[in-house]
Image (cartoon, rainbow, N blue to C red):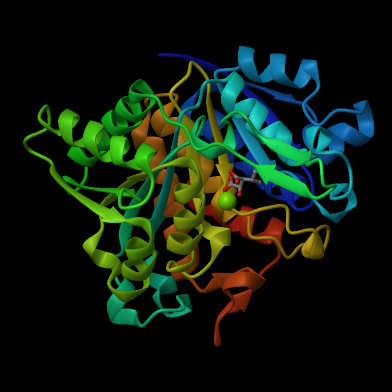
Length: 360
Ligand code: IPM
Ligand code: MG
C-alpha cells in the first residue's frame, strides 16, 4: 500500500529551524524505509514571518497549514519581538493556527525515559515509570475570551481585563477526548478546575461528571488546580490523564514536563480539526539558538505523535520512541540532559544517532 502525506513545516524562530531540520532527516528516513511519499512544504511563521512579510501568520502560511495532512512546528518568539504590538507578536501565530485549524485538544505526554530518571528534579522513586498525559483545552477559555484589553479610566489610571469563558459544548468535547484516550491507557481521568472559586469551572466539573456516565470503565476524579500543582511534585505517579482548561493546562504541562528531566524531551499533538499540529513543548530558546546545543528529541518525538494521531500509524510512533530510547541508553546526551559519564552530542549528531537506530 502506498501512503502519500503532505506535511507543512513551520520552523519558526530561535532553535525552531535547528530542531525541525533533524525532524526532517527522520521523516526522510521513514519515507525511504516505509515506502511513504511525503511532500514537505516549508513556510515561515512567528518572528521569522514578521521579518519576511510583516505578519507572524501570513495568509500563505495559514493556507499551507490548512491544506496539509499535518503541521510540524518548531517554536516561535524571541526578545527581538517582545516590544511590538500584541497583535503582531510571534505567539499570535500559534494562537491563530490553533483556532483556525480548530485544534481544541492539546495532548502533552510527560513520560520518563528510563535512562533519564536521574535527570529529573525529583527523587528517582517518585518518577520512575512516570507516564502522565495532560489533555489541555486549546481554543477556548481565558486565552480567547472576550471582552479583553486594557482601558484607561476617567481618572487616567489603567484597567486590564480578560474573560474566562467556556460553553458546555467546549467542555464536553475536550472531556470526551480525555475519556477516550484514558480508555487506551490506565483508565483514570483527573479533571482539574478551580470550582471552589470560579463559576465557569464549576460548570466544567458538572459537565465532565455528566459525560462520565458514558464511560463507566474509566475512573474520574476532580482536583483543584492549586492542589494539582502540589500533587504533581509530591506524588506524580497518582496521575494518568489530566484534563483541564487552556491556561491551567499551559501551566501544569510545563510542571509535568520537568518531572521527566528536561522540557527539551517532550512532544505535543494538537488535534480536533481536520489537520493536526505537532510541536515540541519547549520554546524558541534564543539564548542557545544556532549553537548546536538544542535537543531535537522533542521534535522528533512529535513526528511520532503525527504518525499516531494524524496518519493512524501508531507503530511508527513506537518505532521512533524505541530509537530515542536506545540512543539515550547508549549514553548520548545533548547539553540540556547531560549527566556525568555520558557523551555530549550536538543537535545534528543527536539527529544522526536516532536515524542510525531507525536504519537498524
Ligand atoms: C505553549 C506556550 C504558548 C501558550 C505560548 C507561546 C503562546 O506557552 O504552547 O504552552 O501559552 O499556549
Ligand atoms: Mg506553555
